[in-house]
Image (cartoon, rainbow, N blue to C red):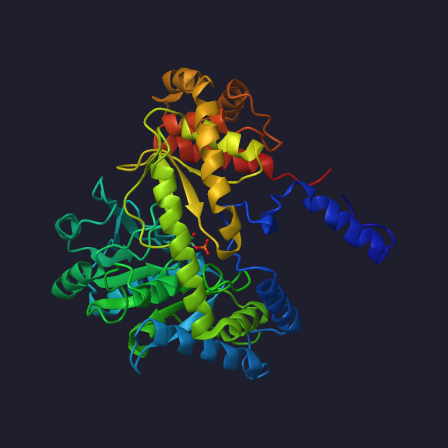
Length: 480
Ligand SMILES: Cc1ncc(COP(=O)(O)O)c(C=O)c1O
């Protein structure tokens, strides 16, 4: 594509944009069970209206747009309250879980530079179920991630194993509430005790669960304490753009005190332009996401979210029982929120995902790692309630169809050819060979994914990662 010589009409523009999304999953029908957090069309109307009202306002400078700061202070106050912070707790609005986590990792690193200057190679300790964005933040910010195996039955972090992995260089420890892969809450009180004893910064990753767990806990679901009620917790991330149903681009990171948050801030006056003072990673930013968060929180209120929590928990219990009852499938761990995953010891889960796609569903494949076998993940949404029985019926059908499909042959061949490969030796030619063997055209999105997922699943993690980087680097090409 090139910049058109003359501007196009509205009809042409929006017609083209509509056509662009023809191949996207039609998520509004409620059959996309990952990536989407959907309480229904009324809420979508609310976030769209608030977002577009503030779309063009710049959240960079509160002296010019005080409204953005006002809305931010409101939505931070709500988060502090839900997470049981006291009047010392403060926070920052960010663009998503990853940015909140980057902010917390930077804060912990700079806090350690001040409080523990003897540390020279700072480490972050996390369970193997901890979200990848901690490793990404460590990669960007120059920390060393240390990953500890979890309990292979419950998929919970094991406090004694975390304790043993602490070294004089450990500055930060992470617990998940919930972990994305299995929907379970780590034993935060035990991790908090270790953090206090060892002088380590404990961050609770509540990006996925922090919000909804509050309501589920009040409903009596068996969930351990995971917030600022636990002594030893220094910071918590919590995304509004997940189960608070805000527009994408909305998360918060909350600190026990302003003294801790100070280390997250950044100022630069060392150039000729305007002085840069940033609370988070972004500088110029639309006030749309914070406005949409403010609007949806006030739209539902406590009652509205309690109703949603009741609904999604009933759905979760039904789906967990239904999936477990399908011959050949088993749920992993014991989900404590409206997310779960299941595996099969008999059938390729990747074929099941493809078969489900043929029937109009999206369920999310997850590769094997550490204690967790390859599995399929479900994010359970209020707007999908009417589909719960159909999902289970179709899953049962797809397991039987998947039994008939050949699996593992290509993965075994590729594993034999590439498993001893040093990822650094993966040349563009080798990569093209690998893709050709897997039947993938590097520049198009594949339809059926089972063979590709089986190949990725079979390869050692560093080769997997290198391959995915090469693939992305091929896939994103300017439209010519
Ligand atoms: C537990 C957890 N932490 C962090 C993240 C990262 O959030 P984001 O994708 O908004 O950057 C996710 C995303 O799903 C998550 O589930």
